[in-house]
Amino acid sequence: MKGSNFSSKRELIYSTLCSTKTHPSAKWVYEQLKEDYPDLSLGTVYRNIALFKENGKAVAVANILGEERLDGDTSAHAHLVCKTCGKIQDIPMPSITQKGDAQDFNTDFVSVTYFGTCKDCTSH
Image 1 (cartoon, rainbow, N blue to C red):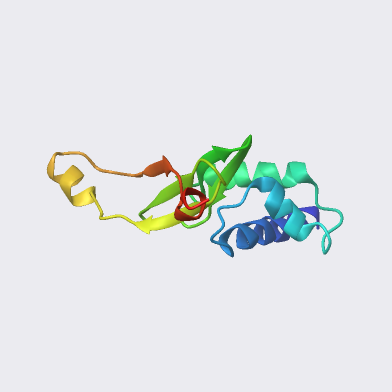
Image 2 (image 1 turned 60 degrees about the vertical axis):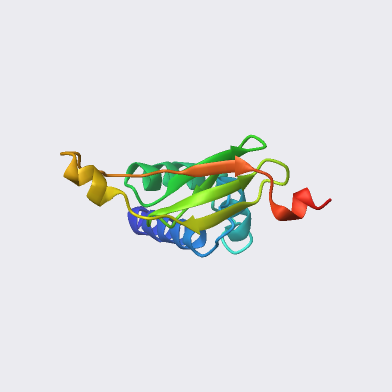
C-alpha cells in the first residue's frame, strides 16, 4: 500500500514538473501540489526530483536566487537565462550527435545555457 502511494506521488511530481515551461524549482512543484495533497512533504519532492535527474527524466538548468531550476523536457534544446529577472526560455538547438558520432564519440547528453538579460529587462 505504501509503495503504491509513493509511486502515485512520484507520478504527480513528475507530471507537475513536465506540465510547465517555466523551468520550476522543487519548491514551486511542492506549492502546486500541497493543497490537494497535504501529506506531501517538500523532502519527498526533492528526493523524487533527484531520482528524475539521476534517471535522465529531468535536468537542472540553472541556479536562480539559490534555487535549482529544473526542466522535465529532456529533448535537445538550449536555454536562455535572464540574470536580472530569472526567466528561463527554451530555444531550439541543432543536434550535434552526428558530428560527435563521426569523431568516434557517442553523445549521451548535451547542455547549452546562455546567460544574459532578456528583452523585458533590457527595456527598463
